[in-house]
Image 1 (cartoon, one colour):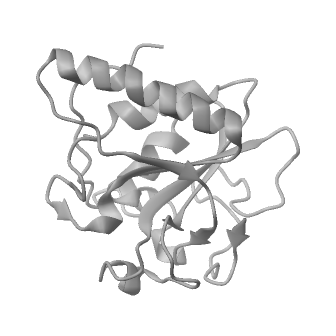
Image 2 (image 1 turned 90 degrees about the vertical axis):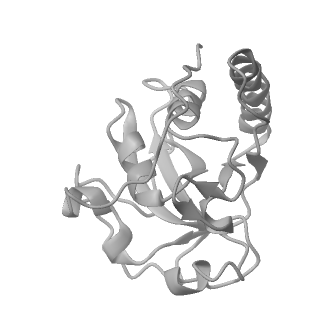
Length: 194
């Protein structure tokens, strides 16, 4: 489910002009990823071939109508996430997971680099059982790769998507609107081989 209660943003992707809100064409699929600050995370996905649209928002918590200010307190339980709308005939879910794993450090718990708090945790929210199984399998594969180089345990949460709440308009495609804006994402440097 997608909550439009905070969706005061226009239904147009700043980079590619595609809609960022439902309804989407039936052949498109949805994936939800949280890998730290959603500004840089969103850019990682909108640049990929086969990604139709992206939007940033909040998921994984218990507040029914969260906003950014509330998220930053940690009281809502929500994480900053990116909704990725993609064409599965062009880019598979496992290729999206490759982008996810390779663009952050999933061993840091409630932080990514200098960004500290539950809203920055590593999280995958799945749309359907197949995504859930693929995500779990990918975690096991990547954990094995991280162990080989002495990195710690992956802390990524994997759970079914309950509700995606859109973030305020100024957060949408932030790094395209603000090319010199902050991005705290740091990779482990370990590739996820498909």
